[in-house]
Length: 367
Image 1 (cartoon, helix red, strand yellow):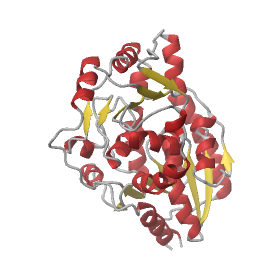
Image 2 (tube, rainbow, N blue to C red; image 1 turned 60 degrees about the horizontal axis):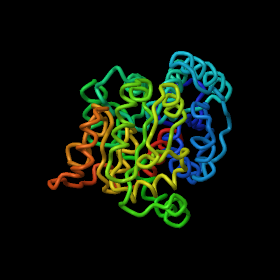
Image 3 (spheres, helix red, strand yellow; image 1 turned 90 degrees about the vertical axis):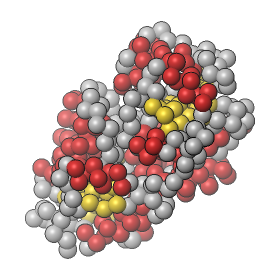
């Protein structure tokens, strides 16, 4: 058994911690591979995302095993949410005594799981390690940095993420495996072509609409930023489809910000398969989501990122992504330009077998 397992109560059990939409997508294939290898996985759902359209529907659609524990933490301030998760996760870990706790991404669920495990002397594995926006005002940046520094096994999606860890003095336990979201995009886009009817139901034609997503607090919690973005969407030369995150909807109502239905069509949150379909067929994508930036790149769709920095620097350097923040004029101009004529498209994110590599490494560590 590997020396990475730190607990005096050695265990071949893996606990996977998820709580937000992107984590459900990332865990789908990894969980499948772990179980195919006969490994014992226990899933904890923190309840960070609790709306059906951004939680349970993903478990159903992606055929993820039902969570063994649902902590039902719900929304709240970062401190309240993280503290409650930390307490409840610790209770489960003390009961289950796993050998490894597997965390994903950069949410409060990620940090809570990593802290709870490390304080119980249980090995922590982090998928999407090494990402950096270098903006410490982002809660996600704090989560990912702290998680990396208490992790024992660090699964990096890109060469850039490996370098970021090295620059912080982290080299032990680092594995360049590629991006699990690339695996998922390849695997589930085939299924989406067969099952998704969203283009017909929304009366959309390929390359005749824009797709937008807005959910980060720096945009939703700033009335000026949110108003600038919505006003920009109201001026685009084609209709924009905006699946509305509950927080975004709440803040639009609170601040009396309206989308012009002739230009910006608000729809409820969509399933993963429907989202892949909307992304693949969009003329361009406007987003503040890290995952959607990558999916746009996977599908060779120009992306306009509604932030001033990104962890996925490769997409910007290759010309397929442009950072515009919440500047209305920059948003409109970037959409009109589209992808640069000098844009190159390289495979920065692996070979589509990241999940196999991760499962294999975990199996070596735990058996």
